[in-house]
Length: 280
Image (cartoon, rainbow, N blue to C red; front, side):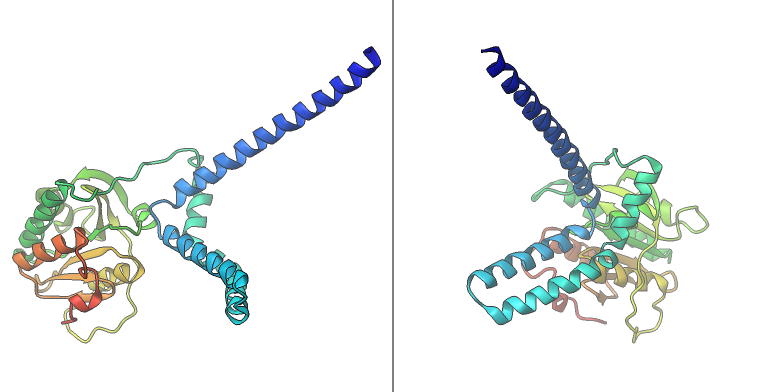
């Protein structure tokens, strides 16, 4: 009886040891994956990953349905994407390594955004409109970016994080000439000013109109790279412009600005189509 019991006991100990190690291993991997998901949350990588998921599903379906030509094309595209992924996700990879080096990989700042029907949206639009009107009348240059579904975390990291309540007085003070934060863009996330003095990608499109400088290029650039809305005030002329989906609409008055911001932030049908804003 004893000879039969002890070998099985040793085997049981081996199995339990293996399972415990596996559980620890799985928990560590799950934690790392979770932190990586938090890291890319609020960035363009979310939309890119969704696109990769669509390609993977389409590849599997084409194989199941014996669509050989389509399956071959999709497999070639996936092969090319493997090479392109480090380039596509370069900002996220850089941020991950920087956080790891600074020991901040384990920390996370929660994102805030508008919920559908949030009454705070109305107040934010009114404050932005009022601030833009004041800046326009005084010919003070400004660049205000409103984050929507595509996260702008990498651009927020390029500036000074503020996390302040949106108000017209606050925005006007930020863009006052010769103040520390006037040069660069303000990024608004939800009902908070996430950061100021942020650097944005410049558009490479040619401008047919005169009086368009770096602010307009930056506003157009961020609208080309994301679904963000850029509100621009020209320092030379005081003209108010909106850039969305790579299209610039200029010479807006206070009522026009408020109506279009309301349409964009409320996600009205057709409000985000570039054809809705003809280039001027």
